[in-house]
Length: 357
Ligand SMILES: *Cc1c(COP(=O)(O)O)cnc(C)c1O
Image (cartoon, rainbow, N blue to C red; front, side, top):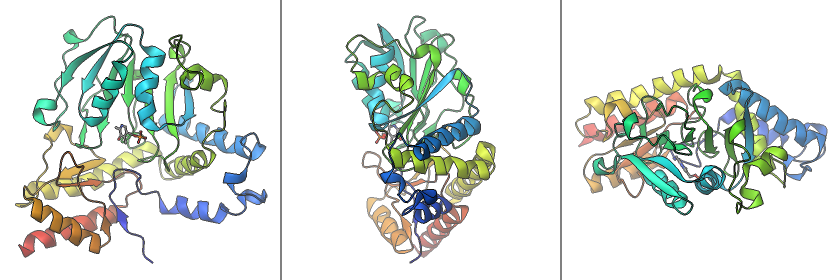
């Protein structure tokens, strides 16, 4: 059976090479006589897996030494609570750019004053709102953004300058897609199922000085300090997801790191956006300077046509192209593991579909 091109926003495609390695190692991980799922998390084999995964991630992202890397559970969504529980004393600034920041804001409001400094809600989240440093709270405990908005396909064209206020970024759908300057952030977090690996592990990259500032009522398991002290093994970590993430990090390293990923991602996105510019049927609802390399929504403006397109595409092995229920239309998520031929096949089908009308 041929593998399909899966344009899902998450869980998303994994590199074929990674899946093949995992298949080979499934029954007997490197002569241990066990699968990774059966290894003790305290075993030497697993210690080696998690240490190598961390070292590779540090290398490909160039994570400075004064940052900790944590492998946690609960998805990106648990970070919506962990961020305020660990950092919020009085107030924090948030930029509202869609569903995921809406959820993060609602969660944070339970613990303090949340100041929404800018929002693109009036534009149906088709852009990143203009930011004015003068409106930022000088005394905020942190400043929060979602760096790539998975549902709307928007991305920041530059990182906001928040001065001494720690910048916290939900990078679930853009992490590892291009090099970023980690030192500009206080915390970067990401659920794995988009660009890292299978669901079940959440990566948190946190600057040292932000650890140990938790509110007194913060549950032990939701305290970053617990996981820093326990080296992500205070309790049983999501071992298999960490193993798979490690294979993906090694794959990125082998394929030229984040600079090469960015080049490939730009090339892929360009094929799609260029077509959307010339098409008379399909268009991008997103403002040009905020178009994401990872998630590309597109519309025809006609629900029946959209449904017909999605159905026809699926028959050609181009799967999961339906847009998010709140946006409609289509969305092609083209993360690192989506081959360039997947994007070419999609655009060919779009042309074919348009020409037949
Ligand atoms: C997918 C996603 C989430 C939610 O991730 P979970 O791991 O399902 O909690 C949060 N933020 C962004 C930007 C996402 O893309």
